[in-house]
Amino acid sequence: MRTFWLLYVAEFKLSFREMSSFIFGLFLPVGIMVIMGYLSTTNEELVTTFAAVATLGLVSTGVMSLPLSLSSYREKKVLKRYKVTPISPVQLLVAHVFYCFSLSILSMFTVSLVALFGFNMIFPGSIGLFLISYLFVMISIHSIGILIASTSPREKTTAAMSSLLFFSMFILSGATIPFDLLPSVLQSIAQLLPLTHGIELLQSQALGSPFTSYSSLLLLFVITIAATTLSLRFFRWE
Amino acid sequence: MTYAIEAEGLVKYYGNKQVLQGLNMNVKTGEIFGLIGANGAGKSTTIDCLLGTKKLDQGTVNILGTSPTTKHKSLFEQIGVQFQESAFQNGLTVKEICEITHSLYKNPIDWRTKLADYQLEHHVRSSISTLSGGERQKLCILLATMGQPKLLVLDELTTGLDPVARRQIWNNLRKLNDEGVTILLTSHDMHEIEALCDRILLLKHGNVFMEGTVQEVLSKSGAKSMDDAYLQLTGEGIR
Ligand SMILES: Nc1ncnc2c1ncn2[C@@H]1O[C@H](COP(=O)(O)OP(=O)(O)O)[C@@H](O)[C@H]1O
Ligand SMILES: [Mg+2]
Image (cartoon, rainbow over the protein chains, first blue to last red):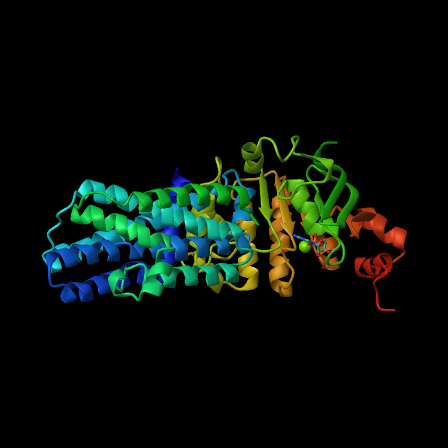
């Protein structure tokens, strides 16, 4: 347990020293929330925007930080090193996943503070259901990150796959540019991205509108199960 | 006579390429054993197969009385390993890696005093990446010995170090061996082999080419130094 705690804290310190996860996962979403807050004219717009921007943290840890770190730990033989100690390298992986979850949740809370206190957002939906949906979307997106790490042969390949996925989700999923403003071609591409469905789910929970996003829910569920199963099947320690 | 490592008939393929060809080797408890051979001879692969980090295609390994694939946890309480690549999370400090490694073992050493023994006490807060090659390798020994192991496995620990750093490491290893630690090491430095090893095994294309004490290998080859012996025996000298 002490090892796990030390590894968890170390993952935080390492990522803080390196900064990019904090920039993409925390500062950027907060910045975007501030801008979008000024641009929102109604509370409904504000809530819709908030639910989308709140996912930026989980996307950046899920498809950037997680696969990049795991790939690097494999390529640099860090995982192999833990194989010849009394503990299993699984502990290091789990510690990193927990760090990712923590940063995602921290980012979501910070963004919600900005929306609530900076722009007087009134949250019409159920906070409990919103939080549960958030955790579900977070786990789902992270399972994709683990799949990338498991199947990518090299750190460089991981970096390319991660950036592609991150920036397409960042731009197309409605987290920065409202989905309705996208041309219809891009809208159909966006429908292929899991985050689009995650945001739809979160927005409906945040607005407290009657639940109709069954297909999004099902899709994310299938993605989570499939990505986790495939990762377990293909994961390599070195 | 007890053995820290007994390995018989090790066979390892990478794809179609056979890298270990039925290798036998024994490391006696309490000795310093040197595994030598050209780059690509199969030294690192042998170590991987002994420790179970690579799967053997054939052969048996007995290490500290058990198989490396069973009783993993209790076995690796007693074995310290430094692979050829020193593998740390980028950006960790010396203190952080020491604390993490310290937490892995039941009976760890007091790493702060050991840091001083290894002249690393000024680097407690330094990032590992800022250490010199020699400092990093000394840290690697310290980490490998954190759990007070009975067996140390060190792959090319001193490759690329300057003579002073190398001597410091030799002294550290001798001291550990005097305290009863069995050491298996690989090296390309024949002075190091002469200075440290009780017995050596010369590996060629994944087979035992010659083994014995340094004296035995010298007399079999008729050479004056291990350097000459190595060149003669491997037939890979400059002709
Ligand atoms: N993962 C691997 N896949 C395929 N071939 C490998 C792999 N690792 C090592 N080899 C090959 O096996 C041979 C032995 O390698 P190695 O055990 O690293 O030798 P040494 O440590 O003596 O330099 C070399 O020819 C090397 O190219
Ligand atoms: Mg090697």
